[in-house]
Length: 247
Image 1: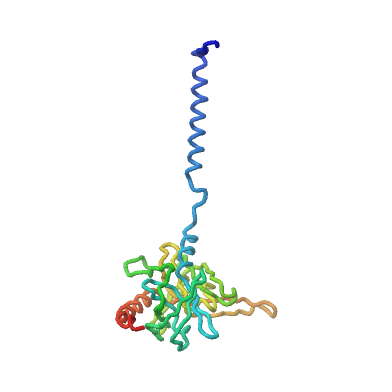
Image 2 (image 1 turned 90 degrees about the vertical axis):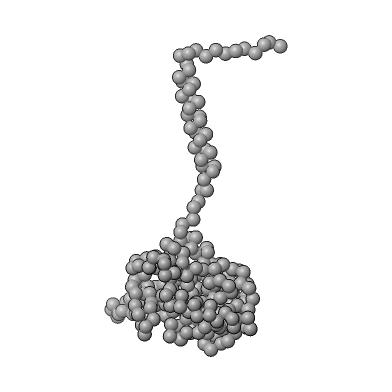
């Protein structure tokens, strides 16, 4: 067997070898960086929707479907007009889990109600906007969640903007457009920026403008009960906790 030969590079060729080696190292670094970076990063809107989907439930009573959402400790918020006097409500989450719930507080003035599930809720929790949080502003991006009838009974969301603020009979409201539909009453309206609940879908005001004999412009104004009203009813619910043990 012949002994291995030692190849001696000509000094004049060394710069070329160094350049090739440098380029190979740079290419390897690029390949490693691609391998370590997640090819897709979800948007803030997608994150908000994914989280809300775990906490929003369909509320059913005979002849009506509405929406409610979990705020923790098996307590849900919905719209008072959805209860229609019923004392036992049927809740269904997005995974098909079912729960029986009873009203805790029903506030006709704000059209808000809280419910207590008789069985532990295994889904997620939505956080309410708090007094220390930045106040929602005109033009802020918001998303409503719920189970509107025109899409069957499936979970959906609608994206929109805060168009204004109003007070009706002493109740603080957020105004948006084309954000809520029948069946979404009681559902949460969430800030895209913070992911917190800034209100509850409550009512619609439909406006139809006649352009000519064959054309009409249809617009829907959504009225949303604002977060300060939610905080007040949650505080009242917490004061009633001692009664929940007997439910």
